[in-house]
Image (cartoon, rainbow, N blue to C red; front, side, top):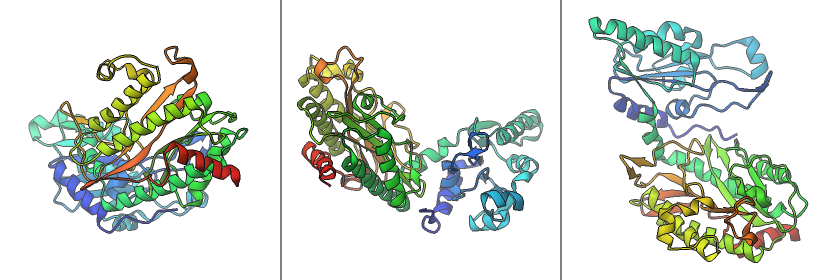
Length: 444
């Protein structure tokens, strides 16, 4: 499903940018391993994002070595699983390491069982090693050994790596601005996500199980060509909508409930992330609608602010101002809006940020601030806009009429040269349009 390669040369161009940033350093990227839910029950394999970003390799346990200092024909080296007829009988054919390395543009590709023999020599001429600790015990042991050897011998030879740096120092900024191929995949994931959540909105009715709506969403994703959900689908009815990462999806939807669906499809490993909140019976109560319209106004205002030159904080603050004013109107807070925001009084009802980056990971890499300053938005960045208000039953400060109401409305936004594109705008957010979509399903 959707495993077509990105446009030709994409991975090579990414590696060239990485080589330039590495200087005299070397980067060691271990891939993901097959995980097990229990005993011999495998979890569906998903490649490591950093390894994939630079190489396109999707195999378990692969290791990539990039050597910024190299001029010996081993600048980009891959270690891959060797052919194994018995293992392939169970898990499918493996490509020959040398053939796969050639396909991926590697200078050299070796069987994975040669890693211990060859990695120390590949790191010897490096000043720094870019490697994330805690990801792969086997590779980490070899990296640590290379650093220890250089510490002991370096004073006499002047050779060997002397420091360890997280690969994110090079890769996070590269990944933050998406190229055209990445944008195309995120746009496709967003379109499928709209289909899935719309299908749940049409399928909702009192008496349906949260798990049934989850099945509608995930089934729609797969039928439309997604690899999988980008993360476990959230379906929270009633007070469950006030639990930010509710994933049990085990309750029955009651008449009068609001239902919050937070879901996203993955296409070609790239993620979307969308949330809609809607009435199970097709009609908001006055209290539900009042909360909903505050949240949707906050979403619309934050989207309007998202453009080149604005900061991530500008987007968040735009949503906060609307939410804080709305909390006063709803009777949940009292006082001056600016003072309430400054004193973080809103956090009882809106405890999370308005945005996160979106890409290969649903909470994608990239700093939101640098040197104490909020990140400036640039064309090619993709972020969510997802304000919410949550009046959990246990929040005593909440007006009694609002307790148990949880609302979040989320869109995916691409920053463009002249503004922004809302990738999920095909799924309406206006309260009357939401009601109409739910009733459309009930009429059918």
